[in-house]
Image (cartoon, rainbow, N blue to C red):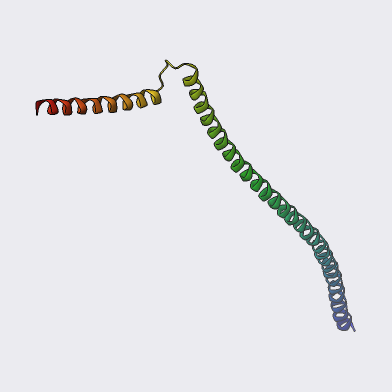
Length: 140
């Protein structure tokens, strides 16, 4: 009987230890499951936030592309306006110089000097050839 009571006591104490460990493991398992559940919820929140961020990024990229296109269009328009302004300035300078020549006949411009030189050069050349022809005629 004594031996049986010692063995029963041993198994009984072993049984209680196993029950305590089992209870502890069940608590740990419940905590692990709660952590997994909370992590899953947090992961869903992060995925939703990622989708929102991707949507905002796409909208910003689209707006950036549109602004870049408008900027390039503005640059092209500015180049065209600069060209038009240069052409207008050149035309005004030409008109101004023509008016100056018309209002002051004694002022020479480079164009007038060149045309006068050509005129007088041809005149003298022709005159010189005529004198040579006249000499040859009178000598002959």
